[in-house]
Length: 270
Image (tube, rainbow, N blue to C red; front, side, top):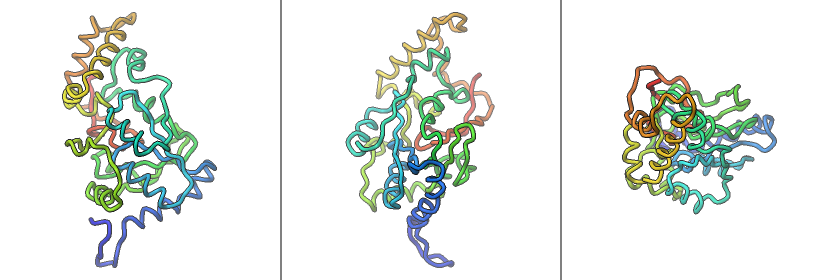
């Protein structure tokens, strides 16, 4: 569907529909927190479009980028250059410290990293995200507005019904900058080494070998912990990268969800 078209029911403007959604929910956001909306900005195409729409809507908001310590360098450079005003939130523990503490890397089922690195912000706010139904089977089941009782937060996904074509059409129409990784064939941009990308991790490590070295070093430290089931960090890393899969569905999709990984329909080895 185009951003603007004439249907049997009259003209439709998908941009105006989103602007109206954002404005209509603002009183609820302000009641929840006087600072207004918390915009979850990942630097991906969806949150880039979302932030522009929020600014056009003229609502009260804060935009936050959650640093994960495994962000692609090109993505960090893009955010620094084009969105210096966005708050960059650092985690208490980075990915590699989490691997050591949990005695293993995150898997498609034991995805503890999202909670610590991606979903830690926005408690007590109404959080705006770039989640869209077209992204995956799991996200097609999401609602436009949701409540996370664990986080004491409300969620609004204003562009949930937009297609990939809608997102790119809006970027071209507005002349918005976007991360150059998309021009290099990346369809989605997320954490380097994310288990959701399965075997694509090897291609990521070939491009960014320092991340592979850091993951291997973290596995070495985790394997040295008392009671470890692993003989060595090399064995742990090889198991992690083997991508063995059971048929257990993942029932914990991430709430932020903008360019986070390959798919929400996941399974794991443990």
